[in-house]
Length: 286
Image (cartoon, rainbow, N blue to C red; front, side):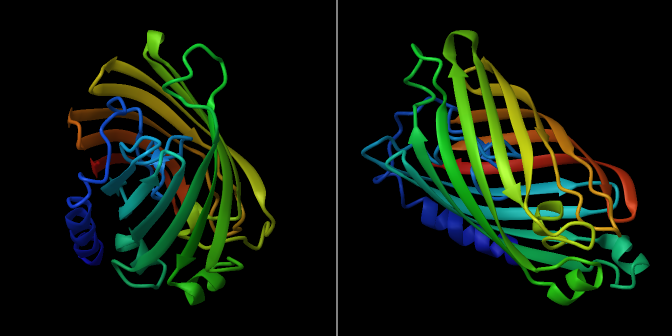
């Protein structure tokens, strides 16, 4: 409920933005919103900037995402503001519900980890839409600072910190003639399960480089299908961490609203193997 209340306020604030924002970008070329709040795919950020603002305009997205595996639940809500199609500022609040697993671990059924994610992304080169006569992708650099509210529990399972900062660079290329979008991201991170299980661990405490990618096909201007992959560090002795991948469909019935449905393979999470999860995300953008 805490996340939903916050999102309601964000959506109300976002509704006041149309006078500031532009509507010159093509449908779906701004991506959706990933789990940590940045514009991109569901699992990984892209080099695009949030919202529909162009270089003289301001845009914004508000979103809410739910992911439900056999044994866990993750709810994420937040907002991203795009300034002049150059700079993106984002905030996301994540709530990870352990359900009965929390009871099995002695934490209590329904024990939850909450995490705040503050993001900044800067487009440094290229334009994914306009540069159709060049092989140069749009390139952006980004930072995501994360703060978890369960420091004592995280230290007990071997994590070194309850806060950490990810650094990433993304390259996104849109091939309009082929209706294909490709993205690749390199991330420097210490995060365990996005930071939900803290940062660093008793197996490894340093930064590691992880690879993330998305490939999407635009079936028509308002509908895209695709796949994503995200490699993950493996820092904790108590919990093997697997890479993630998903298959998604993104639909934009009107310019300001998009819905993303995905099926994600999450592998091992703490004491539960083979976690698979439907993923549903609603985004309102201007």
